Amino acid sequence: VSESGSNTEVGCIMKLVEDGQTSMSKTQILADKAVYYRTFIAIGAAVLTCIGWWVAGDSAGFILERIVTVLVIACPHALGLAIPLVTAISTTKAAKNGLLVRKRMALEAARNIDVVLFDKTGTLTKGEQGVVDVIADDTTRFLALAAALERESEHPKAAAIVDYADRKK
Image (spheres, rainbow, N blue to C red):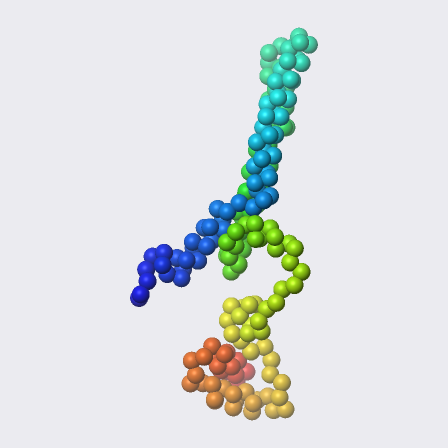
């Protein structure tokens, strides 16, 4: 073992996931600003409610009821909690499925992607090399020969060929 702790591959992946979860997107920054200003609007509406019902001559209990109602309805915390929660959940689910998001702004910008190119090794869908199909005049003979040639190789593609041949018997 040449590395330990945070210097290992797993440690580096964990750091990437942590960085992705702590970075803020433009949407989250905008939501934070909206919550900040909406808090003052909610408090202002509650003060105006208090003044209005006080001038109208209602009781303190009635006025308090109306103030609480206004604060609950106008409370910006739902917005302030929802957006960071959604982004945290989305980056966590993405990481669990093998997609590391280093910066949330990049994830947000991904909605503008219109072309995606993949290699054709098969590692994208299953995370391992594999044979999907064999087209040959004599598939059984072809697989037997290919497996015999690749059986002693340590290459991942060779192992995939041998595994496929073994499954096909």
